[in-house]
Image (cartoon, rainbow, N blue to C red; front, side, top):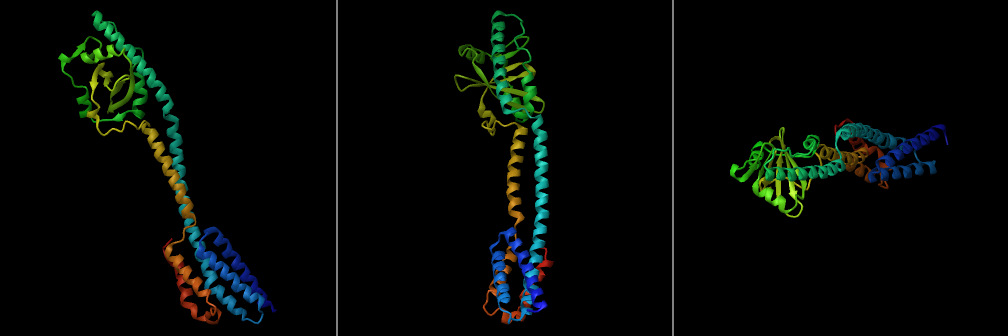
Length: 320
């Protein structure tokens, strides 16, 4: 075996090794089949010295080299796009971290709304006593407005100013009023009947205006507390259609949840994009495999210039 023969076989093994690495990277059946067929063709020349070794070199020049270059270009393009995705993922993670530092947790909110309900119930008891005794004793518990100032931005639902106006509208003949507070007469009666057992239900906001919404523990009735006017009124939830009361996440919590979901989706896209090969190229590779699998392929190798040129032309496209 002369030196030229040895060199061509060595170069052939090198080309096939490169193709093998790419077939493992892309995990695409068409690429793997071409790699296996290229091994068969190489072995055929390695085991038969009488075959024209120039045909093996021509095979790699026409097919393998162009295919390797094409796959490398796709790989480089994919890696660039994947990098952009991971950059977006990292930005989302940084935003989640920054927001997480300033978000009150659901646990904080659930604990504090229980404390707030106790303050409201205690204040309503004192208000009842004050109204009954015709005194002007201040009924409200200490720091009663702290809860809303802390949680309204993140946990309260946005409503229109018009809708808020409907909720706080009342007829003066239907309320008790003193220096410190105003309350529906029937609401006070119901509170007394149920021993002032209420719980914080939700919060509403319209700009800077805040409403706290409470529910009787023993029955399906609701009332509002409007802190800026120390106002307590019955509330019909039918007037608040469109609010998903089951969504207890804070505004920032919802954004964090959405960003986390988006990152999971982007991670999946990155994995798929990393090994993506355009369908047009897969179709061409499948056609090439059929050509090089022909038992008479080597006898007609010089006639496959057109097919080889199509493969090379792919290197100049903008498919990737």
